[in-house]
Every structure is written in C-alpha cells, then in structure tokens.
Amino acid sequence: MTRSRPLSTWFVWAVGVFVALWVLFIARGTSAGAAVDEPGEFIVTLLDGLTFAGLLFVVASGFTLVFGLMRTVNMAHGSLFLLSAYVAIEIQQSMVGKDRNIEAGDVGILQWVVPLLIGSMVVAVVGIVMQQLLLRWNQGQDLRQALITLAVSVILADQMLAHFGGLAQRVVWPGAVTQFFEIAGERYALSRLFMLALALCVGIALWLWLNHTRMGMVIRAGVDDQEMVRALGINITVVFGVTFFVGAFLAGMGGVMGASFAGVAPGTDGQWLLNSLIVVIVGGLGSIKGAVAGSLLYGMVIAFAPAYLPSDYTFYAIIFTFVLLALVLAVRPYGLFGREA
Image (cartoon, rainbow, N blue to C red; front, side, top):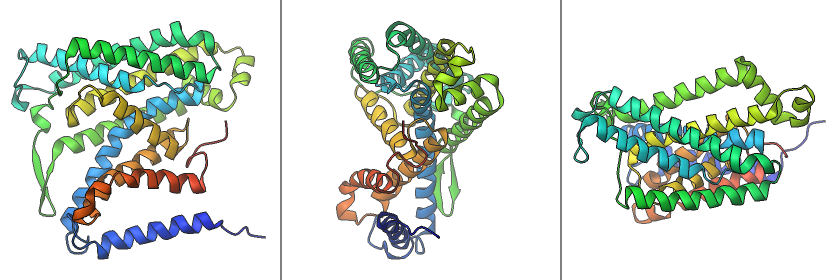
C-alpha cells in the first residue's frame, strides 16, 4: 500500500513549478527578463548562484563537520572566517610590498596561495587551542559550548577592530584569474569560476578524506554513534581535535576566498555565521551532503531572487531566504539530509 504525499510536499512542488515557469516565461519587466527572451542573463544568473554556492560550501562544510561529530554549534565560526581574511591581507601586502592600491597585475598565483594557506593555518591553530582549552572539558553541554564560542567571537571581533581598523579591505585575486570572458553575449569574471573550481577541489578532498581514510571512517562512525567509537578504544579526544582543526581550516580558507570575492569589514563575521547557519539548517546539521545541497539552494535564491523580481520590488529579495527555510523545514524538519539528534 503506497503512502500518499502530505499536503506540504505537494505545496512545495507547486511552488517549485511556479518559480520555474516564472523564470522561464513570465518574468518580463524584471532586471534579468524571462529566460526564453534573455538566455544570456539567465546563464549569468545561474553561474552567479553556482559560484556563490561554492563559497558557501567551503565555509559551511567546516561548520557542519564540527557539529556532526561534536554537537558543538561553533558560534565563533564567522570570527575565524574574518581573522583568516585579515591575516591573509597582511601577508599579501607584505609579499607584494605595498599596503594599499594593490592591482591584480601586482599579484601572482603564489602571492594569493601563500596568504590563503597561512591565514587558514593560523585560524586552524586558533581553533584547536579554543577547542582544547575551552570546549574539551564541557563536551556534551551544548548550550554552555554555544555561549563560550559566542563569547570568543565577541572578544575576537573587538580585537580585530582594534588591530585591523574599521575600513573594508580585500585580498586581491591574482592577475591570471582577473579577466573576463564572453558567454551567450554576456561578460563574465573568470575569478568566479576559479572560486568554484577551488570549492570543487575542497569538496573532492573532503569526500576522499571522509570515505577513504581511517580517520575519515572514524569521524563518520563517531557522527553515527559516539559511544560505540569510544568502546572500540579509539581516542575520541584526538578525533575531536582533528575535526575542529579541519573545520577551522575550512572557515579560514573560506575567509580568504570571501575576502577576494567581496572584501571584508567589521560585521562580516556575523554575516558569514548567519550564512553558515542557513546552509546547515536547509541541508541538515552534521551532513556534508546537506552542506552541498544547502549551499546550492541558498546560492540560487541569493542570485535569482533580485534578478527575477519585478524591478520595483527587488528590495524584497531577502525575504526569499526565509521562504526557502520555511519550505524546506515544512517537508524535512531536520533539513534535507539531517537526522534527529
């Protein structure tokens, strides 16, 4: 006997079909125009969604990895993102020999990759110190850990404001990727595709690590049953430490990519913590597959909502983020790939 779909599922499907028809045929009078009339605008918007989703995935995968094993909602994740960006900016300025007005032509691949690696490594070390000193002794106390990491984020925000100032800064993309190419009659930035390629590399590396190494298998087992892993004699403290290190490293990597993409300033940490929360709520807490799905859906909403709303109503685009959350949670209360804790 087949089970009938609940009404909420049919409603979500109906909304999806309506959005597709709107974008393809009806959206005349919007800034992008209907996709059948303006295929170039549609392709550019699609690429915008995909490339931003890549950046979201890099940042949110570290967040969900830490939660999946340790059940710690690391509220300092956004601060690690911002700290890594500031460290990378300082290192890039030192390598280029300028502290302002750096042009893309001044920056080689090495002068972007080295700041990326050092910035990410610095926050990974900060993350492991925070985990060992502040979180290790209260494992399993979710609320206490959330409050501790929230306090750390406030302290880091104040210290970064004092040291790096309140002006917006950015890591400069290397000149080799700061170019434009033409697609369907529209110009598009090669740097965005470079960012997407990096995100794909991170995703593949994470998949290989979690599925084809002993540590990855222990982490996946720990996500499913932490007590069983302890009973097998595996030092779960070391596993926690490695997981937090990787999660913080990914936050740092995302921070340098985000600083290259849109720059950073005080307050960026809170914005990216919120972005990570939305991705893992949509995809499901503790799931890397969920991080992929959540990043794609959120990235598409961010790209398509302002482009395909009527021109006089584009300032309502942010509302569609909450519409996405409501629709997903209506049919999957724990997110697309989440499970009851």
